[in-house]
Amino acid sequence: MATLFEKLGGADAVNAAVDKFYERVLNDDRVKHFFADVDMKKQKGHQAAFLTYAFGGAPQYDGRTMRAAHKKLVEEQGLKGEHFDAIAEDLVLTLQEMGVGQDLIDQVVAVAGAPQHRSDVLND
Image (tube, rainbow, N blue to C red; front, top):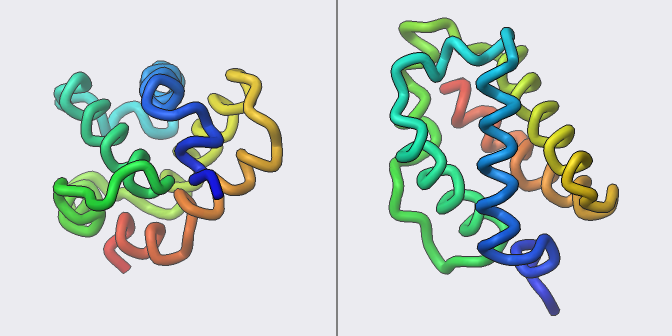
C-alpha cells in the first residue's frame, strides 16, 4: 500500500509544496512575523524533512521535537492556537492551489493537524 508521501508525489511534490506553502505563510499577516529572523532555506529543509517523515517517506526524523522547536515562539512571541490554525489553513490552500485532491488534503490535515502535533507545537 502506498504511503501518503508516495500518493502526494514523493520528494519533488513535497519540496514544491513546502516552497509554495512558505510563499503563502510569508505573506500572511497573521503569522509572517514568526519568521522575521528565520533562515528560510534552513526552515524549508526542516519542514520538508519533517513532512517526509510524517507522511511515511522516511523511517525517522532527526530534527528537534515540535515542542522544542516552538518553545521560544510560545514563550517569547505568543504563539497560540489561532496561529496554528492559520498555518493549517495556509497548508490546505497551498495544496488546493497545487491541484491535490480533497481526499489527500484530508489525510494531510489528519497528520499535520493531529491533536498531539498541535499540543506539541503550542507546548500545551
